[in-house]
Figure 1 (spheres, rainbow, N blue to C red):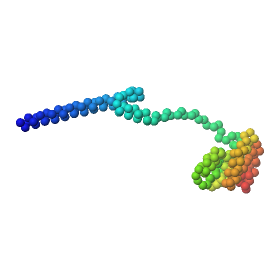
Figure 2: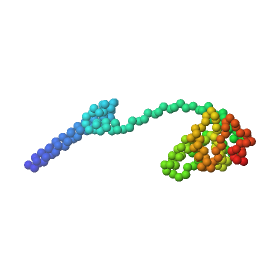
Figure 3: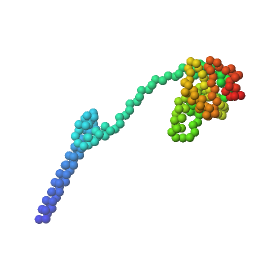
Length: 199
């Protein structure tokens, strides 16, 4: 009699196991089908039309992802015809021949010549303002110590009064000589050393 009971229990257990596997296989197939529909959809509209929380989650994730930036078009650049204009070129050659034992640099930012002590926000503001202004020429000795700064004055292109005053204050405060040369009345070559180097 006990073997009949054993057969009944074994039969019921076998049916339960078979039913569980059948339902698990059905769930796996449904899950796989949803997965394929979600990730193989061609358009976002197809993704959001799918039913179920998994499809909604994928649609939200896709919407939250940043769209890649398209590369900006490259601007067509061109080389300047000349690095220095005609008057500046003449002054550069005059400086080169008049004080050959010095180095001449053109179009230099004030931030490259003048140091701003301290730190914090005020220093950053001062450096930003200095970087926005430039001096026409900087004369250095062979140890790269700044000897003088040179501004070219032109009646055709005068410097704004505020910028001119700012430069004068900066160079006076830093102890660097600021020399103004009129492009219409250039000094002679034998005068340039005394004018710039003070010798």
